[in-house]
Image 1 (tube, rainbow, N blue to C red):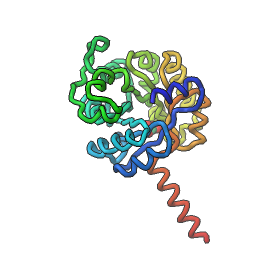
Image 2: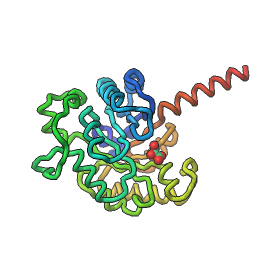
Image 3: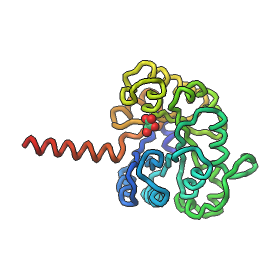
Image 4: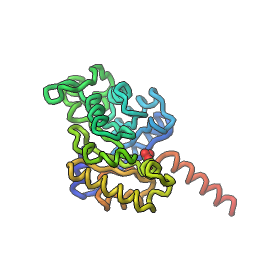
Length: 259
Ligand code: 3PY
């Protein structure tokens, strides 16, 4: 994951992924074999329970992509389970203040010399395999290897974005454009055409780059993903399972009805 983000930082191509809303080992394995850098398991909005999250993390890592899990909220117990499953990164929705960002970092770090304030408990039985590491190596290196991404997707987060971006341990800021538009008082799906949302997007991107962090943006097509990469973002999805399945099936049904 980090390699793909560094590639994007050098402007040698985006860090690209796909987004899972459906549960299932087989689905995750199939999608993770398409050659993307990462696959995100959405436990905030997707129909993915704890057991399926564990199965999908294993399926994705064994296919050579990085498993990233979006947790339902920034609760330490949720972060712990996801990291113990072997997630290479966590994405936390609705981070709005520097204090919340600091609490997320504490929850994701083992106590160590460089992170004495870390709160993560030891007991990651499955995570080492997801990194091809021994248990000992995982424990020694997880604080450096596991990445922490927070979503900036509300008016309050926007007001505090410079402070959030500078929190030590936060690796990436990711814009959820639908929630951001909604919180700014607009219809979520119109986000791309609303000047105030785009100005907010520019401010978040600038704060992220100024802090030397990675910037991510949600996208549901290759075209939008490319636009966001060309704008300066590093990390973009270019679809989601439910969007792909419904779009393809309804197009085929429409075509058949016209034949
Ligand atoms: C948003 O667009 O608000 C997101 O968080 C993407 O899922």
